[in-house]
Length: 251
Image (cartoon, rainbow, N blue to C red; front, side, top):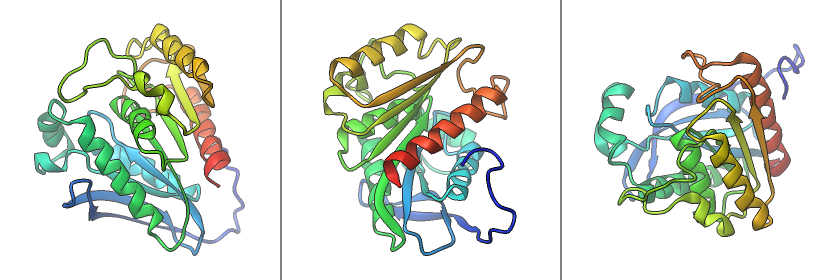
């Protein structure tokens, strides 16, 4: 739904809460859930948070998806590193989080959505920054996802692997079966325009369904209204494209 494109007489609401779900390792993890308060059926979206952690932005982001008619689940990928403020937990988790752990928790969130009685059975995945990289990785490793959105994901094209990040997601392009939307700022250096070009070339080579949109005058994190990189016009256009993408492939 584009901005202000709703009727003033439409009734309804949402349910939003911090709760626990079964994580990828089989133990409970916290997840922020926002969903329409109605019988549905509704599509779902798994939100993979960025390096700064399971924070206020991602809670608000989840609620925006619920307003648009999606069951949104944002799992705490840093659960095993303890609890505190998002900044405190992120300081512990950012260096040690593994790709395998993210993939497992993302699949667990997908399964939670599909088990809901008002789910339509289709689920997308989205993330920004490191979460954008994770979204591409997850959609390449978990075939049950139906669409993916990468918001300026740094490290999709990565120069070096590590024990925590043993593969570059671009190398898994042949396995990507979910349609991919990518949004990038042309002033960003991580990913740089050249890296976005490289990723796009790989998608074309393997015949994947995708759309990339690039914004002049925007850098890294242009959705983040809490920071100096916020670009309102690019953010609103990107949000509308994100919702349209998920509606196209998940509705």
